[in-house]
Amino acid sequence: MMDLPAIPPAQGDTPGTRAAETAGGPVPPPPAGPSDAAARARLARLMARGAAFLGSEVAVMGGAMSWISERNLVAALSNAGAFGVIACGAMEPPRLAEEIAATQALTDRPFGVNLITMHPRLDELVQVCLDAKVGHIVFAGGIPPTPAIRKAKEGGAKVVCFAPALALAKKLVRSGADALVIEGSEAGGHIGPVSLNVLAQEILPAMAPEVPVFVAGGIGRGEAMLSYLEMGAAGVQMGTRFVCAAESIAHPNFKKAFIRGAARDALPTVQLDERFPVIPVRALQNEGTRRFLEHQAEVIRRHRSGELDKAAAQLDIEHFWAGALRRAVIDGDVENGSLMAGQSVGMVNGEAPVAEILAELTAQAAAAVAARAG
Ligand SMILES: Cc1cc2nc3c(=O)[nH]c(=O)nc-3n(C[C@H](O)[C@H](O)[C@H](O)COP(=O)(O)O)c2cc1C
Image (cartoon, rainbow, N blue to C red; front, side, top):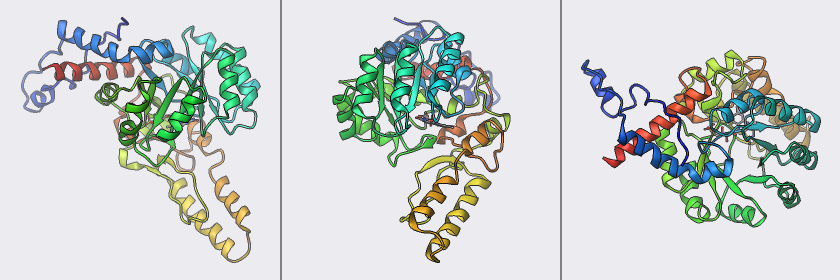
């Protein structure tokens, strides 16, 4: 049985503590001793399958985030007992090889690589992962081609796929997926239409008996983590919650926007005209999101006047956000760049080392287990 980080529960997380604080009375000590140990042991049992699959101590995957999930954050997550995942994004194969090697220099623990299925050099990227002995390849951004899954598995890697619906979850497992991620529309970045609340009910009962299923989207506290584990999830994947990790290279402006942001500020992109589809991306609203509406209106006007044909208009709309995440994350242009963020952004209250964030999450989950035990 693994040991979860033995950090005492955070102040204010124990039932009754807040009420006592508000009343100005003495703050009771955090629970300790056998009941806390028993709660942590139960939590460890709930996470055992996911942790064994990942080769980590806790069944928490750091959701790959383009520009943010690079060597520093990935290694910090794995070193702290979770499971970091490099976001390959648009990297070319030599650049990915470099990033993997740099991450391996910072940690001897397992980590994964997230590959976007529509990358034109997907096959070569899989080979780069295999050559570097990466143990887990996560295919994102669409249903991966079966040959890519087969190549990854034959090369010795475990394959994790995003399942947007039950039928596709079954198909992916038939194609060889060793584990699934179900990501609800609460998540940051590119999103599907269905909430994690519903996806979990549809997919966990059918798929959890077959393969480990990790849940993502809107998870910000340990109590939520625990609930999904109790529903049969093998573990959780979180992105937004780790953006402000001390080890994250995100620009201070980007981190400040997250610390200030509330759940209601993290909204999906608005599409103005159904003839010009826009892939929904959940992000904090800023000048860029406002200009995107104006830009769509202007492009549609030019299309109507005959100035732009349909294909050119669609391309123009799609190009609006090119490079925008990098501008915000790396350059710190939080007005015009893309501030991709999940609804859990409201639970990001400051910068803290990954180990502290994980300790807080596990303490919250353990406290909730203890509370359930009565
Ligand atoms: C800034 C940002 C960038 C992201 N980039 C990617 C990506 O490149 N590939 C991917 O599969 N998911 C990406 N995601 C989704 C995360 O991997 C993860 O599934 C998601 O953040 C989970 O939901 P949460 O943000 O509510 O924790 C991104 C999310 C954020 C917030």
